[in-house]
Figure 1 (cartoon, rainbow, N blue to C red):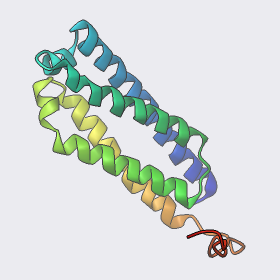
Figure 2: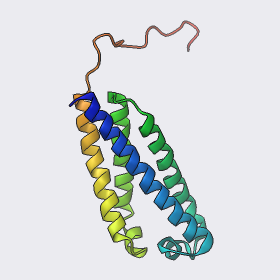
Figure 3: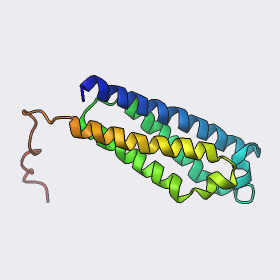
Amino acid sequence: MTIAIRHIILSANATFLLAASAGGFASDVRGIFFGLGPVARVVAEAPHVGLGFIEAHGLAFILGILMWRAQPARGWHLAAAAIHVLLGTANLIFWQLFIVSDMLLVGYVTTALHGLFVVLQMSAAISARVPDSAAVHAGPISPGYR
């Protein structure tokens, strides 16, 4: 896999994270603060649970920005894969949220894309070569370190 292809994968990954998290964040704000939209049904009796929604979508947006700026190096591909393992697994564990909020299509699409990006990013990480000049370790530990 070429560097250009790996860069495209990171850019597509970032685009998905940015778009999905922005949409989720907007839906969260509408539901939590204004009682509108599908999230309103979930948070009506316990608005404080919205904290997790806001944090998750906000952090996904920040991660999307980082992925947009990331270089196509093995470490970034592994980080991106880990992001999608976490988010996709959370979707599956809390699938009932998609049912209760009547957002099954959103659940299917986002969870499938998380799975796709795990596969793409792991493939990119495997194909990324560590340069011959890369340090094997960070060097000796300084004497003052305990």
